[in-house]
Image (cartoon, rainbow, N blue to C red; front, side, top):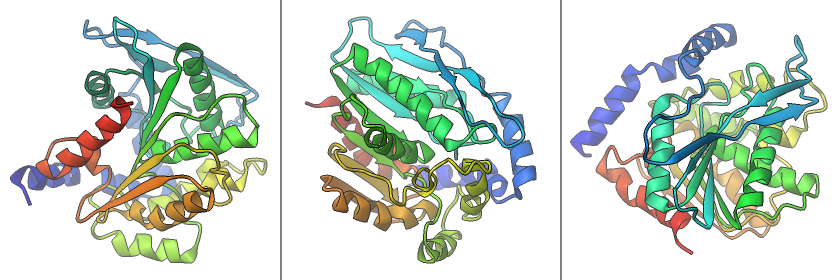
Length: 314
């Protein structure tokens, strides 16, 4: 174990992420909303790329049981090269469907653009403290539709809950019989998901002591917030159980064995296999949640570089 890995684990523990995700719902939401006030959408001021806000307007949204929201506008940051490439990446961040992206996440997307040579679109999708997961998926669909009007080659990259949302987006394309083609490639880092069986829940609990970032209890806490009591939000959008993954492109999935969400690996592997999707599942021994979204420690470098190569190469 490298000294960088040891320091990273310590810093993650000190961040309080696991403590917050283990709180009761009301207390957790209070702390997350306080953090979200610091994580507002912004357009970077540097000259490394051309930045723009690809605003998405949604009508007939679900909202919450207490406050229906018939329409709203949402931001998507476009990170573009000055010489327009043929390829773009839809990069969907994690945050447990509740946390808005901190500024360092934008730095991550900019680094992706530099390492892949592709333009990167980074959507600030509706969060499930105020909206349903169907609202989140519908926003991503509109972003993807806009990307397809500009690029012939679009690839998807999602981490944590962002990975789960991209699986749902692929299923949504099938559900509505969309004329949009599937992406060319799909990369998922620690895709989330609530436990759909008692076996999955027990495995999440058994991994809880190893996970430095996420409490297993969070996967139960978030569950009612995915629909806010709206009976029309389909079950497959809440757990991926029964989702239609047919026609998804070649897919790469990365989990660390020291994370709660790796309990979903077998289910996703089975569903993709049943749908006839060519896919690759890696379980990295001892690695934490979303380990290869960074190169803070050398143990993650090879898999990080592999994901960038998948997004970069023909």
